[in-house]
Length: 103
Image 1 (cartoon, one colour):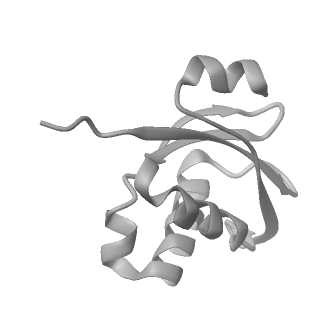
Image 2 (tube, one colour; image 1 turned 90 degrees about the horizontal axis):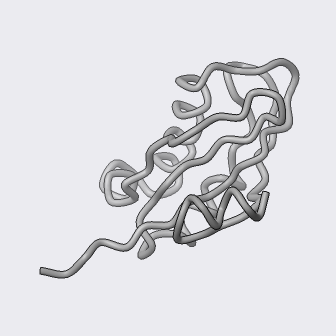
């Protein structure tokens, strides 16, 4: 059986206020669904791992095979919880330990 490879992304959110974790995940999923449809979105394995509220840094994980699609979807996020926003990728890593040491 082949092991599933994942990647962890540190995402910096730039917007007014701090949306909840659920609002951020909903905006991210909406972006992925808009670009790649339901089937494409379900193949990403996208999930939220952690939130640093002070720095507005969200850590998400996805499958390695769809990393370019997830990065494109992150760049297409324009609003979170009805407020204008932009999301930047700070770092990508194969382990959480390496990711946290890079941000």
